[in-house]
Length: 448
Image: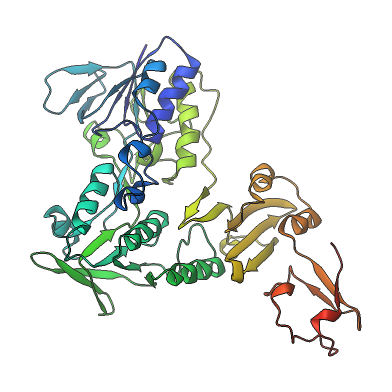
């Protein structure tokens, strides 16, 4: 059997690995228009600031592919799929490549919002960029070396946008982040933690503008700034757009494979065409597009069994889960993070906000089960959270995990419960007093 995979991204590469783990004899070929073997996109901003090299980005070198008996074809853009003949064709090549099973790991492209002049100025290389590949990073790195480039605007305050802002700032450019939503990282953080992150970013000399819709890129021969919907203008010598992703579906559409926003797949990651599967950023499953690494990893295991026809593992969607660093700060976000947006009640929240040390921890519980968590600037609870998601937990073990205490006034017996208070007891001012007039020194920790 011959399995052809289009795409050497995380979804395509790990699908190849998982298929090989199940069968040593199946022929596996990967085709990609990339110049490089599989590399991590998360660290692309550090290539711009020259903190890492291209070699550092590449996860699997040539020897890895040889050891797995995987045939990787670089610089090969697939321009046609023929499901009836079970072939694909490569741009500027006459030969047809046959397959028994085809996996589409087409990934995604940067989303460019409907901003006047954005697409034209990007295509004409007039100072507007997106960051998705090594080539993009190298172009940006070269552009900011121009002595006339001193001010940068990043449109989009997502994970990659914020890290990009951090690295651009480290290149000694005046840096501004413009975010459409009223808070940073609304999918990963609640409002309180979003405010804390904004303050931390601004303390590093990066301006953050929230609730801002960019209407127009200004400039003619080159970019000179942006204009917001409200009329405000910001000067810029370079504009970097990091406003999410769009699933890559054109190749599938041309082959009459069913698509919507993404390539439609079922629970076995099968498309509408027999023996063609799709995974990763390019797919749509039950009206949802994931676009996150954990989904790619999970899907790569399922498609590996599906290509052999066993169909004993179904895809049921992926719980949103992120563990990464933002500007050197650890962030873990998993599951339900904002119960107020959920349809039913009965939610409980334990939170610990330590603004002095820029740490925020929030656990979300329903029916004594752990449903979600935010851990920002603090890593000690990560293993517990991952092991206990959707499991029964007690209030006391969660208190202990977050080191949240109850303090009792030795004078009147009043209690200060850190779970229900906005300020940790240690952060209260020295002259803080209980209702009875006793100072904080008269309070004793109860559940140490």
